[in-house]
Every structure is written in structure tokens, then in C-alpha cells.
Image 1 (cartoon, rainbow, N blue to C red):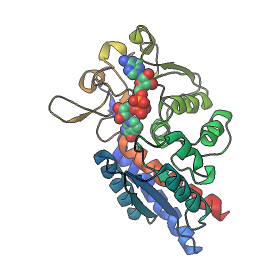
Image 2: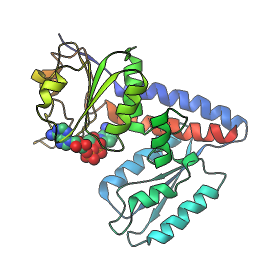
Image 3: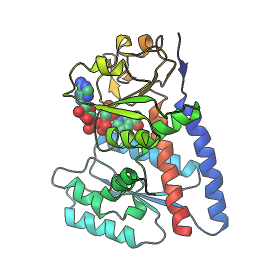
Length: 283
Ligand code: NAD
């Protein structure tokens, strides 16, 4: 079997077109959906990520205000800035680019964001809302993965999904979303013994570890759907995921590539969350 590709770029394009239309509808009512992006310090990867977020936003009619602060900014000053953004009715979403400088407590900073503007979905209130099935903002990467499954019409009910990775921003929320769709969910992590014995039972595998070739063909049940969240550099410096793509695509029924899979969907879901924040504020 050669798996079909779930094309993250194409799906993200559709989502951006939908965001553009809904943004225009809000603008017609005099509301400009606006995202505040807060960058502290000069981490090179963060510079690239925020540039993408600003460009994606402007392409869809959203306004993204990028504010850069020096690495030496005090935590108190950053908290004061977030409180000001919380109180600003013209700002609908607030994103603090991580990682923050070491002298700052990231958890405390994220918790300072109003849950109504938490478009990254990292606030404890957002995690809690997902857990209990209440409206809130879902983290962009797992939400994008769920959209990819929806795009192929995949029925999760009664299926076994195996999530590899238990981070707060990908693995855990991914598991909650799959559970919400009535899948049976197993979460694996670095202490999981005999990972392959578990993944071989999976109808859906979500790999979110950050380790090249973690998922090999012998670990995949024929016909399984494989979503690759990992972002790694191979020996030639090329971007690759956690899945041995060339071999696994011969076993899986559907697979996401890296690049061009989950990454563009993550970016698209941030736009969706920002737009939804503006729509909710507009009533
Ligand atoms: P993280 O780095 O905080 O944690 C990795 C997780 O993997 C942990 O839960 C750990 O227990 C688990 N793990 C580590 N080694 C393992 C092993 N050998 N077997 C099983 N589990 C193991 O996680 P993160 O922030 O969720 O990032 C994971 C990967 O996803 C990284 O490569 C990151 O770059 C990528 N990522 C991609 C996107 C995207 O948009 N494509 C977004 C976020 C993260």
C-alpha cells in the first residue's frame, strides 16, 4: 500500500480563505480582528516564527501588532504590558512567543493573559475548558491535526489513537481532543516500554517527540493513519519529522509529510483562534 498524503499546505490555504471571508464580514461591521504578538529577546528561531505569524495574519486581513522587547526586560514590566493588552478592547488575541528569557517564569506570564484572548490555548483555563468540553481556545498544533483527520473524513469513534509525546502544548491536548471524538486513546512518552507493541495496535498515530525516525514501518499497522508533528533536522540539515516517511508511507493509508504537513496547519489555526476571539468579543 502507498499512503495518500494529507496535504497541510492545501488544507491551510482553504482555512486561510475561510478566515479571510469571516474577517471581511467583521470588518464590514467596523471590527478589525487584531492579534498582539509579544516577543522578548532575540532568539533566532522565535524571530522566524513571529515573522511567519505576522505575514500569515496580514494575508488574511487580520492585523498583527508585533512588539519587540529587550531580553533584559523585567518580568514585572512584561506582566504590566500583558495586563494593558488584556484591557485594550482593540486587541482580540495575545500571543507571547516562547521561549522567554530564563529570568522569567513562563507559566506566570501565560497565566497573566486573559483566557478570552489566549489564542495559543496555553492558559490553564484553556486547558481546563478542553478537558471538560467547554468553549475555549484549543492549542493550534493538535487542533490542526484534528482538522487534518476531518479533512479525510476520518471517523474517530471507536478507533484506537496512539499519541507519542505528552507535552502540554501538543501531546496532552491532542489526547483530549481525540477522546472528545470518542476514540480510545493511549499516550506514550519517553518512559514507555516497547513503544512498537503499542503503536502496532493503533488506527491513528500522532508522533510529537522531536526525534528523527522514531516511528519506523514495523511499528505501524497496515492501513493506519500517521500524523507527524515532529520537527527535526537530518544529517544534511533538511527538515524532517519523527516518522521514517519513505518506509511508513508504504504501510499507512494516510500520512502527513514534513515539511508541508502539520506545520502549516499550526500556523493556520492561530489565525482561526484570533478570528474567533474577535467574533466572540463582537457577540
Ligand atoms: P517536548 O519537546 O516538550 O516533549 C517531547 C515529548 O516526547 C515528551 O512528552 C516526552 O516524554 C516524549 N518523548 C521523548 N522521547 C520519547 C521517546 N523516545 N519515545 C516516546 N516519547 C518520547 O514536546 P513538544 O513541544 O510537543 O514538541 C514535540 C515535537 O513537535 C518537536 O519536534 C517540536 O519541534 C514539534 N512541534 C511541531 C509543531 C508544528 O507545528 N509542526 C508544533 C509544536 C511542536
